[in-house]
Length: 179
Image (cartoon, rainbow, N blue to C red):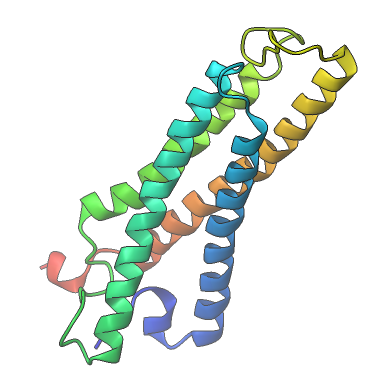
């Protein structure tokens, strides 16, 4: 029975370290996206909300794909391949890799666009406070906190994309695909 990634080549320590770092990147990106969402006032910042919601959905789709595939691999591993998904190393279908990588990349792009839009002057349409009396300093502090969340999220999403692309390169095409 084959396992995916570096674990199938007997490099368990490196494989486990990579796995932990990869999972941590997904978890931290998701946590910071959720924290950012709590900071956005949907009715007052529709531009920020639009970028955030679609970026989070894209990240969620990629993460759901990873989780389902991982679960199916665990089931296959525990049942000696009788139940669950088994494909040779490098044999993941292209659409599956697109779901993983594309979800993280789309989310990264939307977070970058949100970051760019957030640099507008206080009181701009993107982060507007029309129904509240908020001082200029409070607006600046609010934006600074949002930008900090976006920076961490962007860094983690870039790591996610790199982990996925490196895993793809590591595995290469399955032997059955190169015949």
